[in-house]
Amino acid sequence: LKEIKSRKGADGEPPHPVQSVLLLTDGLANHGVTNPDALVKLVKGALAPSISLFTFGYGSGHHADLLRQLSDLGRGMYYFVQHVDGVSLAFADCLGGLLSVVAQNIVLTLETTAGSGVTLNPLPDTYKRVKTVPTAPSSMEHQRQQIDLGDLYGEEQRDVLLQVHLPKMTDRTEKDMDTDTATPIVRCTVTYSNILAAKAFCQTEGTLEIIRAGTLKSPQIPDKDVVEQKMRFLTTEAMAAAHQQAESGHLAAGQASLQTALDSITHKMEGIKKGGLDSASGETFLADLRECHANLASTRMYRAKGQQRLVGHRQCHMNQRSNNIEMSWSNDDDTRAACKRSVGGTRPSYQNKKKDSMMAKARRSSGYHE
Image (tube, rainbow, N blue to C red; front, side, top):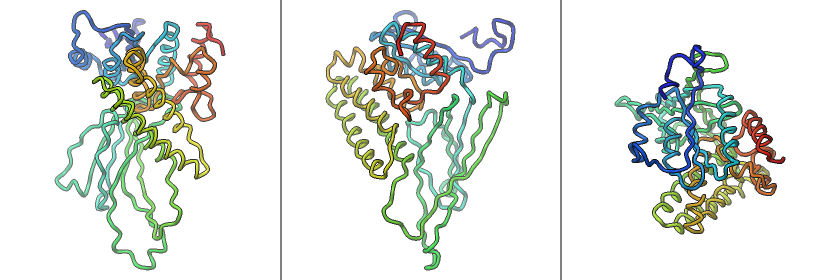
């Protein structure tokens, strides 16, 4: 940490804007500061906001949730490395991401349109680092919320699901009822550092509008993108509940939480298919939930890999960033085929081309076959 904080690199040149710490461990903290909460506090005080932290837990003897907390704190990811051959793959996935950073310090500001009567529900806790912004006494007339989205890799996207309340339309004439009205509801501002253009501060703005139909058309077809984001939240919330229940020794209750999410997402997927569409994201959520459910079959399975996989899958879907190397790039053909679940079935969820390239090199050097 002292070296990476230096204003000059080992070659005497200014440090690169993308800086990161990679922590690999195969056990628990047993020397010096050993309390998990104290470790989190220590890292929080030592890690600069511009430096990311990625954690790698090897084998089944490490504290998965602590490593996840540390990586969340450092805007990084937690990797579960079950076998020794997976070490190079995990580092390849991580480095592929770091080599493809296109933007940093991304902050999204959401403001309701003044005088619109629109109210914005509090953002879910599942969003990373939601900031509370002081509001004026007339907060019901004008609300403001901010989300710190961290950095962005090439080909990645970030989805923010909003819930708003609109005022009742009471002043529309009979003639107006035959027309659709575009109503501005939320103004969005994104600030960020552009790594590719070497610009420390960039800003873009836009306004969200909703079409208020004079007459509802039948049938009403839910928007596929919105449904997929709802499924993503169902998945992460179920995994969080299952992890808490399993840690308390209630494996059956954890399986029940996961099964409830599976049933709900299966139902939503049926609705998408009725509209003549497919959802690769939905299939990914179902596959990961089923795997986590199976890993809660016994205490032995949960301690061997269930806990780690549950923590890793949840963070993956929360952050919309890949960290699933153990199963996605297994040396077993059937396992690898089952885990190719992005659009077109060409690579794991949230994987980008740079990560693909680095993973391919790691597989070749490790003797993995295609």
